[in-house]
Amino acid sequence: MVAVPATAGAQTLFGSGSSAEQPILQVLFRAYNRLHPSIKFNYLADGGNAGVQDVQAGRRLFAVNTRPPLPSDAGTTYFKLFLDGLCVAVNPANSISGLTITQAKDIFTGVATNWSQIAGSNLTTTIDPVGRNSSAGSYTFFQQAVLGGQTQSSNVHPVTSDGLVATSVSKDQSGIGYVGLAHTGKGSGVKTVTLNGVACNQANIKNETYPLFRYIWGVLPTNGASRTVEKFFDWVRTSKQAGQIISRAGAVPAFNKK
Amino acid sequence: MDEDDFLERDRGLSQDQRAELGLGALVFVVMALLVALFVFVLHEAWPSFAHNGLGWFGGGGSVDQELQAIARSGDLKEAPVYTFHAWPLIWSTIVITVGAVAIAFVSSLFIAVFMVEFAPAWLGRILEPVVRLLASIPSVIYGLAAVLVLVPFIGNHLITQSEKASVTPTIQLSGSSLLAAIVVLTVMIAPIMIAVFADGLRAVPRGWLEGSLALGINRWRTFWKVGVRTARPVFVAGTVLATARALGEAIMLSMVSGGVGFAPNPVDGLMFFFEPSRPLAATIIAFDEELSSPPMKHTLYAIAAVLLFSSAMLSVIGWAAKQPMRRYGVVP
Image (tube, rainbow over all chains, first blue to last red; front, side, top):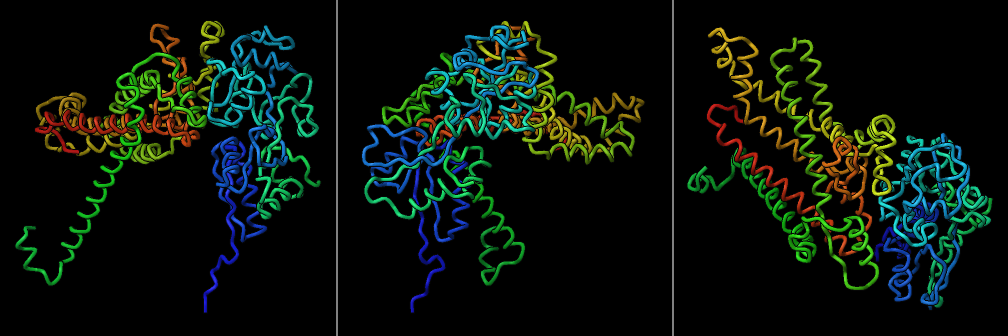
């Protein structure tokens, strides 16, 4: 007689990749594990590019990346999982309603330092830009999408979480910061501004008109992909439950059923 | 217990002996863990020190840009970058710690003297538990309160627009500053000092005080010259304890100190206290997400090693300072 282990048929799916998306992925992993108790996840947040290399080398079953496929990603297939957006927010006392990408870049690179230099603002005070510390995913995203790869200026006050960015801006009339969509709700005490005339909200991120959106991609080997991982990606992409989880965690569901 | 005694009772150990052996073993385990901790941290820190030499403690360049280069070099599969000049972080740690400990020491001394000797009994009964409660509040709560109240107050009311304009875009005077860090840290460590100081003052033999009073010397002078003088070793012990806590404080300081690797310049006069910085321990918090990058890991361990070494030195200095005071002092 062979004793049947309690975890008969249990399977651990090994993945790696983006650290910025790790919080959202962890919630999705937990929810999927509750639906399918025999499937567990092990995710190494070593960065999107390292994750793709892990899949190419066969060290991991899947990867999650925050950029579209490049020629160097040979042998892998990319799937759009969901969307992510970064809002630019100011204090409600500031009358400004919109910025251009160039103005945002000037503010966060220390070129524009007074609100009087920004058309549409009623303030004449020094601009107090607030950003993330350099190890944050949104730091890199903002750096690439807005600053054109430049380092944010040393007068940007770096804080260690998106919540603290929103708090700092809400307490300072001259403040401006970049935060995930989830941190700009009614109670946040900040006001989002339009970028190049487009408002930062779920609809505009979903129809790709807002400038600071990006797809979060699932990456699988082109040949011999794990069927179990494919099923998980399908659940993340299309199920209503995953859509709700993604919304709540601060990202934007792209293809999920309503 | 000597060895012969032990051999005679080989049939079984008494309860006392078992307890003694058990506690001895525990102490040994703790010592071994401590040694292992030092060895591990120093081993992990070595590449950073080896690469930079004494320049590690010096200044030059932007420490934040150096840290970003270190973090990036872990991903690019090229030669790791280790160049790191920690002076702005060390300077920030020194200013904040010394500032907070100095203010906390003076105020704690007076509060403890008042609590023990001059406060009416009912007030003492209230003060005592309040101080102990304050000493045990987690630092993140002080950090949150400071971010929501103190930092905006400094930013909106104490710092003027012309001061802000004069330093932008080099740094931002947001309210997160040396001042905020020192004030909150003082509030954090003072209760520890008060509790320890008060215990020491209470341990002063009554006879010594009464002897002085009997000679017609007034209460204040008696307590100052006899009580406080006798309790000096306890003041040293309390100060060492509080300084160690201040040195290692990370979460609260990462929230209120400003978060930039900038060395505040005393030449700026009063504005010095409004300038942002980031002490060593808070730097570990700010970059802990990059631990997967090997050069960053070694650099953060090097910072940890400096903090560990400082704490150890602090204990040694405290011990040495107490030696000349032992003769007439209460032993903590």
